[in-house]
Length: 612
Picture 1: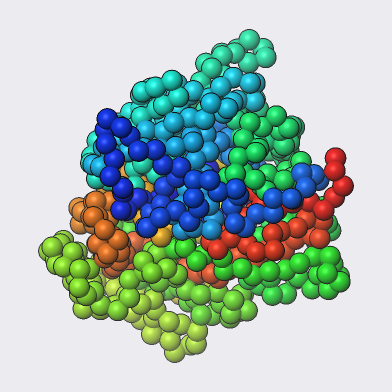
Picture 2 (picture 1 turned 135 degrees about the vertical axis):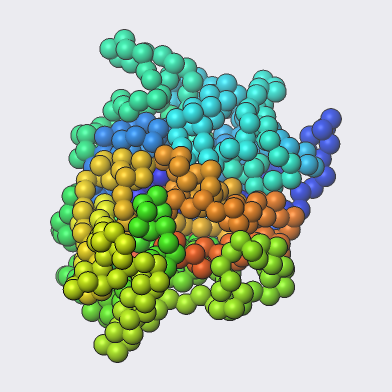
């Protein structure tokens, strides 16, 4: 399921697919209160609240959060500019996810969904009480406008919704999405997941009488239908959201016990250490730590010792999330087109030493594009997975069938030396040779050198040892850290040699795989195909995933895709802890029981401060 882009280093891309549809009739559509992936939804149509919320949580207090970088845009439709954190607080979607289920979503703006047996369309019925903050009703025209503008102005949404040919009004409160292929069971789910925009507001004029333009950046607070509105902002520095007393959906069962903070504010920091000091000083209420060394060594201040600050390491968000965090060479650059060069780059990465010296052994090496889940490939392919791969035998690396993928292991001088030797051998096979202390092209004399583009100075600490290792085999790598706006613009236009990227996968991969690895996204600016992969075999495997008739076939196709991606050495896998390391001051509280697959933050948390 695709969700709005916000907080934490990983912007997570999430999907949902429907299996085992009940029979429906075009003449008399069967309306459903939500969508489940496998089996049934956990909650019945008359559920009172989500299982993990506190329905008596007070609506009070202020939640003070931090973000790194800056922002210059409040328009979440477009791919330009740096969008402010928390914009999703102002918008509703047709459906809303429960964090207690892997795939369950329930009606929000829509009270029901219907689709035919062949899944050639999906119809949503809007709630009559759904209204914008200005009191106007949310209409099918708003939904149609939103789909069209997201597809027109966002490369990410354009790719993700490429099988959605359009939407039309099919009733006073009904909107129907049409699909260009049948039996793609993911499509009814994902069309319920993008923010709905107010057509009348975007086609109107601002306070100065200037026509608004959804294709441009703006710092005008947008009109939304969500629980919060923007109360104030200082561009690039702070933004504050205020809970709306007149929010139309505050009493819905899907919202009960949620949206509890009166104010949610974000303060931007350019330095991660300064951001941490602000949390330690008590000016920030909640922090998710992404540095294992900081977690191990710097959370011993007085407020932690006396209980005013709580530390927790939670696996919940990763129970159904596969992570690939990696250094990503840009195959649009000639020097990275040869897989042997890319494989050599992995042999130069000494994870074990980095983990020991910098992270207090708090990290794990990623070895799958679906790391940490049942979707990750392992061993040698068997059964249906092997059958799928054999269909593509002439188009994929032969080691897929003979050698399980494994990252090189370092950590001591002998292992590192052996890895360097292997890397130099691979480079020699690819036409590079050491001359003196430089790796150069044997034919042209061109040195093997490149720039590693980073978005945060905090990443430099992990990349510097890698740069030093590359230098030992004659490769010159340079780190370039830029501000958030420049980083966004350069990555969207593929203007980089190597970047640090993260992909988050749900337990139900689908159409987003084409956005990550598909040929059609390789040259579409703004896509998440950062590596520039354009491979017919991978396209075929993505097709098998999206058209899988059942869960077993889907799992086999996903594992086959994982193997082929790994065997082509498109990335240098990095590391992850597999836990959400959070710390928070005792001014805020969380439900006693967290959702099975998340933290419920900030929706289900609340303030202990007096009402204000």
